[in-house]
Length: 266
Image (cartoon, rainbow, N blue to C red; front, side):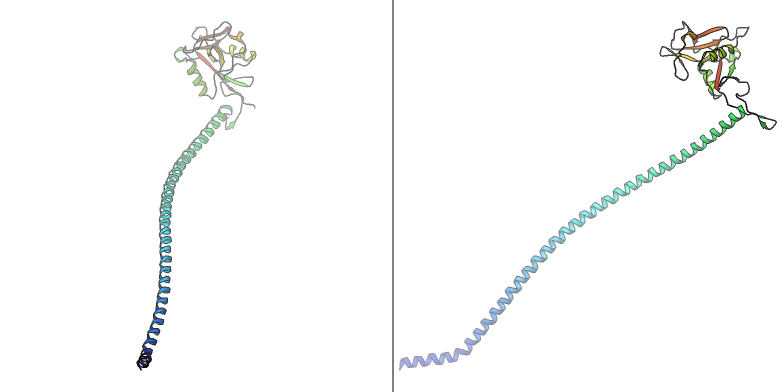
């Protein structure tokens, strides 16, 4: 009877607890689903966080790179600004130089034109409004392909060798370089000798330089017989005079002089 009673108790107890057990199982199932969902959500949140962290790092790196690029571009801009300033300065300098050069070219052309007109007036002077051209300017002597002018001033107006050469250059000529015997005879015959003895000689374009007799064009005197037994001592220059051999005297002495320039072909 006791056993039957106990069995009846448990059966009745099972019947009375069955709804609660079912409720507990349902709750358990619900909680398991919630746990699963929460786990999935947590995994998703963790994954999203990692993605956000990665993106943040990338954004931060990009921001750093962008900052570096901005700095580089700023530096490049500063460099370009400085270069632009230098280019402007150079351009200004070039414009100034071009203006100066243009003025110099203009002046040079004006001088050439003036010289050309002077040459025309020298060789082709107007006579009764008609230009008559001749081989040499007025008062110049024509010989072979050259023109010569002889200066035999009073003693007070005589010149040193350098002064005489400057005077010839002012006439677009130079002291004569004698090229052959015929020209030497011509120069000698026109190195006029006066009776009063005021003229000791006429400067020609020959002087001592570096122990040699040299002409104005840099060439050496080839015919030493023209100035025989005259040592080429620096500071000595040569004069010519009628009926006398060429003589070397100090270049600082004062004498007359002869100028020579090319004759015009007419």
